Length: 142
Image (cartoon, rainbow, N blue to C red; front, top):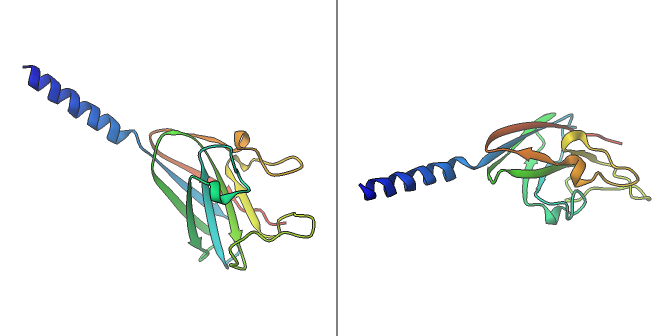
């Protein structure tokens, strides 16, 4: 009887652990039809959104339409923020003008806006629960 109880507990724990993952689908829209889009997923404020090398996960997509979808799977439920960069000329970086204002398209989750600088993680963060969640991010060009 004890063996059956232990096996049932192991099975229940395994099923709960398997179900405790999250998937985030990011709809990126309003794109110009050229270049690449980088979708950066951050799980902490360090580096958000200006240091893509500190992103938790990155998806790169060729721009083939004005709307694209990036899907992050196998996430641990929790708080995340998304930053999107449209590299129109495909040079691997965001081009800026002489005072540092981006010349290529950008977007962030919650459509968060920065004050005298980039948006803050706390304003862009999303609570991602177990299961599936979808968000939409418009790309803004200056």
